[in-house]
Length: 197
Image (tube, rainbow, N blue to C red; front, side, top):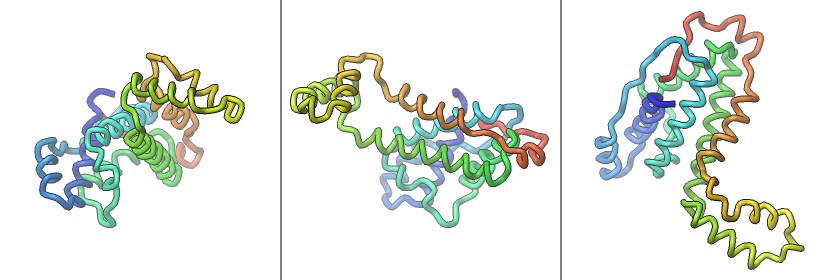
């Protein structure tokens, strides 16, 4: 979602500023900036969460060393608190109870952080590099010993359409599609929704 990058960059920036142990990282933060958190009205919660997750993934891919710093402080600063409040506000306005909003927030963040961590750890970054790895696996693995692994590897081999964005969106879609507001949340939802863009 274009325009939603402030939310994750703000959190990344706040976490880095509060946890950075090297001057080099602080200088990098100064170059990337720390946008401020803003509130708007009118965005449906699912679109807001989808945009926020994509934005967080992009920010963490730009700053891979920040994955371990996110939400690591026991006393978060004002920028992080504003960010969390805006996310929870969007979920509350969407009809989630306070507890379900916190769980949804945690679930989406767990998916984003886990996906980025795995993405950064993979031994390839392009479809061509993936093809080389898969070709090697297919030559070395006895198909009879690992029939399902061989089948999946063969299905991915030579696919120019394989990319991390599609994989990320697939999982995120499943999570957001499974999240539902609850009766307690609908009864107590704020009348003024919060938008994250």
